[in-house]
Image (cartoon, rainbow, N blue to C red; front, side, top):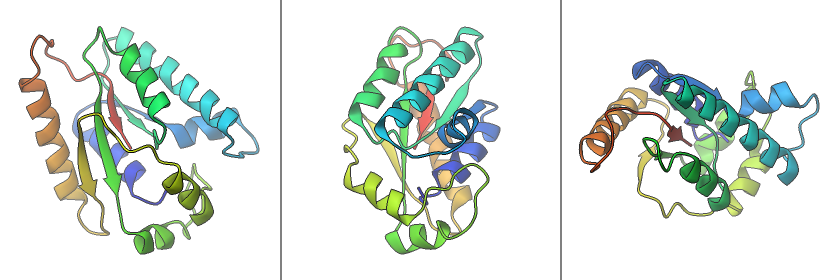
Length: 172
């Protein structure tokens, strides 16, 4: 929370003409009172996976916006896309002070605060999967989008045996 991943992911989806699935939006649709418990997170990501599979089955591109902070969660999505076009990860980081300031502001779909930020930070399983790491500041969204589109094109152009598509993109 507070890294700028949702701000980035929403704009990336528009830039590459993809659908956009937000774990925050899904959580808000599923739960009147949100606790961010492990069971709640698991249910949210299960629903996100279902929606992603539907989009891919319909031959639609999709950007997934979530923390994906547990390696087990990432593995489920990787496995689901194993015989498809695969999954590309984009990790968005920011300085703690920027995150703290951002999390003071009200957001439409997330009420995660700095305490939730610290919990996720402290329990984040580092990405061992190949990924793009972006540093978010308060004024570099255009640069982040440019880096991401270049990375996705490069990955697509240099992945042996993959078909010409961009399904299953993950940001977060």
